[in-house]
Image 1 (cartoon, rainbow, N blue to C red):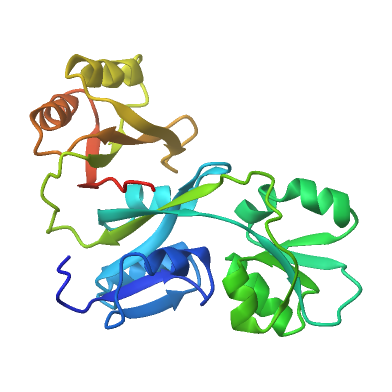
Image 2: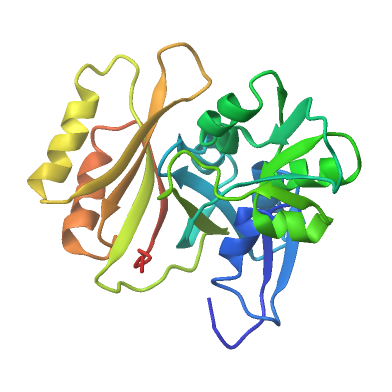
Length: 280
């Protein structure tokens, strides 16, 4: 990803999402930024050639993984990760100016799960309406389809809403990690502070396969930073694993581990080696 060229980025929209805020950390004014309605649409924009990169959320420190992103990376048309971005996440409660009756509150399910104490204390009888993004909830409020939204302060500003209360999250230290996806081909060079991601598929009848996988990484002294099982969709009991490890595939321990894993796994989809973001 050259810093001297302009690029086209798809991202989880609409305007005013936390994804857009994260995107601003890795883009410049000359880059083209196109919002899409959901994670699949943003990633498909890269697959179809409508964008060079797509920024989507993959993990939150409170709520956990974004399942749709994991599934798209593991089983959709191949993409790789070019970089990652982390962003502290705070939520605001917003309405149209002058609104007094709150019956329906819209937000993304991940945001709702991080603001349950506030909702229970202040709006215990309100209906929570799930939306594709927090910003989509704010947009619905601006159109009169919902009474209130839980979203970012940037969404309130963009859609002309009034913030009734800021920083309503249950956990003040919440952080979301985003990945920047691209078509396979280019890969960042090792930096000494990298992450390698992969989807590992094991035979349904292969007893002890997960233990064997972990032993391979232990043998090569490779540290796992993330592991998550997801159903393959083929049949009950058939899973694959999304695994992140410290290091770059060009580092001998990581590269050797992946080669050794190919002998005991049905398949391995390499999802990229990329710099880990240093959090300030």
